Length: 226
Image: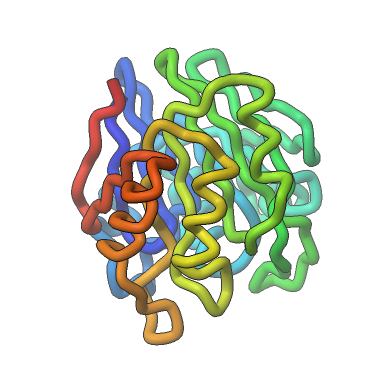
């Protein structure tokens, strides 16, 4: 499986000819690796409805015919916006698209869409290509980050480190201990001044503690999960 970092909190997961986008905020993203009209998608997973996560979802879904997975209230707004293929689980629910499954987990954050819809933020446990990826979403540090690993081994976790709007890199080290993933990719940092941080220092702290291998990606770079 290829995991491509598109900038901020946007990722593309690619396996066996299928592409899953996560939080495709590209237009207006100063760190975006690609434009919204350049990406393909078979599915789009949304952690929550803030503008820097919902991003270009509607335009991409309409152009590609991708199925969007979003928590029920957010899915309702997307349906009104003209997105035709939607799956609307709530926390604990799983969307099964055949080539990928995505289970919603709690995240401690807030969320109101640019259109005014209040929605509950979430993380995702994603299973694709025989691998399990835990995208914790926008969140602060909380103890339930340890729970997904009790259901099954986490191959890779995507964890925010920027601070201000999410946990900072120091709390993210504690999160790494809880999550128990083999590898971690940091996200949600460096896009705007309030979330500037030192990703290499985070990597050193996590690896020196023996919690996980950290893979720091620049926008546009990919990582192969074997």
